[in-house]
Image (cartoon, rainbow, N blue to C red; front, side):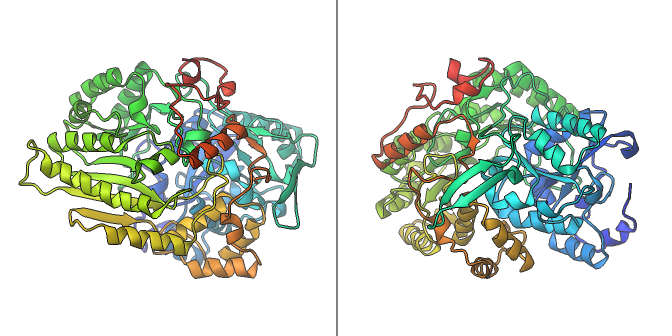
Length: 617
């Protein structure tokens, strides 16, 4: 084992040296000589972003529970640290033992956001690992990808040895067991890939051939060996109460984006918003019991010292036993002087009583997500909330002592008209008015309404996966139009960079030919593209031009009969269901949530047990 020396001198020359040196409370310390497998778990963004990710915490804990495995963390270095590393010829290393990543058996990379793809190539370059999977030798680590972006991994397929599709708690152990067997057998690199291709949920891109039609669309995607499956079905955990959850979180020395303990309430979502990839790929809904959640919370409070506890899920207020859970958690957190926080709230089941009780220790802001400004548009996206719901919830909040709220919206949605965009400004104005129209609000405190407006990005495995994405120019016009229609100084307007959103959309629905664009963008110096101060659109435009690839090909509308790059993946939700939902969107027709009426999406077929699954209620 090589341990990099003289890092103290480098740390003294960079900001936030604690992001690289390890040693935090609850980080795992093992003797690398005592294990058979070394796994470097990489988050392709900065430490403060990566350390906020719950999935990384879970898999880090599961892998390190194995006596034969040592999992260590690695993050994308910030600009100053990378400069020092390249100047001093220091390779990418792990936080726990400062060992070069190249010496590990696995480099696992979580794929949460398409704009981190350039960071992946930069990290491989820093690690001195060949960028292309086809060029790696027998001594190089296996590079594994997982997370939501893995559901369409084609744009980065050339850089990965394999992908894990779905939830990783069970399959990660199967991969480690297969590795030990393969090592014992003395097989070649290619033998391991063929071995794990037989495991459910594992996609090995090199075992599939892709051909194209003259118009650039995909003609076929087919296995090139008997070990490769025709379809890769996602992995899910049927019983969340039985799966391992960390009883300790690593506590950073410095602040991170979500600096708190989190308990995962359930997976999936009953709502069926047509733009939401997470709501589809994490189906069916599976809940943890209140007993399990209280035990998880108690363990984390005792082991971390965090002063805030968060509830994590796509729609926490839809948890069926929320009142009981809240009562029990509040009894625990109030005693320990820990605040309890909820994520963004649905406007149709907002409970002032719950919010007041939750925020007894520390009062924070409120966030609602109407998503669209007009009722027609909310019906198009199947949001299933009304203007009346929002006004009622905002009024309750204002009368309960809050004087500021944040509202999330999107522009650029399919079938959108400018009146729908104007509706965002009008609805925000009505929220301001409900503060001043109520006799119970404290008028001595000014009201503040913040609009956070994102540009819609079509994602795979959603009813809008076939939709066209607005161009940068069109999105800019819509952003400006909305700004011109906001005339109340009590309303603050924030919006996302539309060029980043369009590039995100290109890679979200891209195919393997984009790998060469990524490679060229890396050569031109693209990295940290999720950070506005680092993103350089001109470099990306040059990369596409140099490769002879038109971005507009990937933002166009798709036909129902076109083979999509992600069709090789089976998420359980049927293509026919997605198609029907898109047709209902055209008519602004809504679909009830899963608890009101089952729509037969197909997700129930994935459950091995009925426990906690909404499909069997």
